Length: 381
Image (cartoon, rainbow, N blue to C red; front, side, top):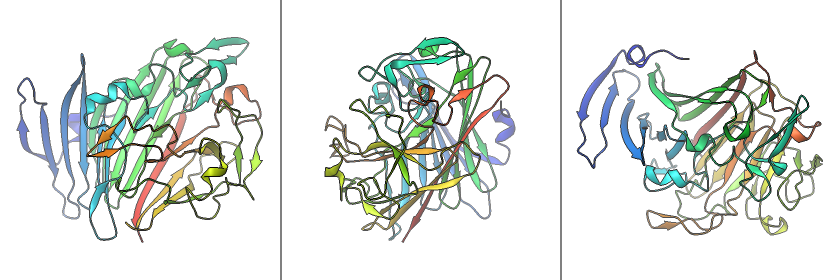
């Protein structure tokens, strides 16, 4: 699906190799020899039970770093500078990669085969009903019990002139978690010299199936110094999909104007959250049908640090989740992840789309290619 690693690493000099003892991971460290950039990459090998995973640490030399695991396609750290030039981690995650084997919060994970919820874990294709795992009460959530967030992806590193890439691939076999078809997926992470993180999913199937892939990062632009209620959010969405008491869309598209869901101009996340029972966990409609156009979906701003994140994607919608179910059971670097410590902005096809004919389709047929591009641009102001 992509070029062998030996061809992709031309021009990268090996600066050191550390061979592990029984308790230490193997580490490769490489530095790109470029005049205009100062890219570095470290690759660690870690054990998760009886599984081995790679952890890639990319540093663009411009204050931005990202740590990506081949277990679950997880972004475990995302380090970006503030307005004073101080770089800090801005995503929630566990202290150790091994802890992601029980990642009930989906911290930083690749989500598939179907992101968000499917009512009763059921859908119909061509007259056949498929039953998926019901891992969220009566419903199916984020791919089920063994979704893309809990598998080992094949992975390799690639060099570009002004960026670094980690390319991962995974084949989900026919029947996995109840889904039809062998689904081959490639997920590419790209860190650029100008502080952008780009993700691209590509999938193909040998049977008609459904696909809705996304990434589940929890952002906190303060560097976890405070919760996200004071973050200022803009969503370029004039409609959202109301939900029932199990967070399943009712099928209606409702205008955000005049409601607590109106983020078409900037509002603090906590400004009207009391008007939303349980907090925000809703699908905001950016486009009412599929297109390849990469559009600006959201802006997230933290005034004290000056950090600004712009989110672009080519999917129809974005799920805004305000961290309602964070419950204080995880503490990292003396920070306890209580409610609202992080928020998610998940570009996607609409939740429960396979059961709502009026929603943009999630169907993928043999001979077609599913693609989904997501871009995070980091700036200060």
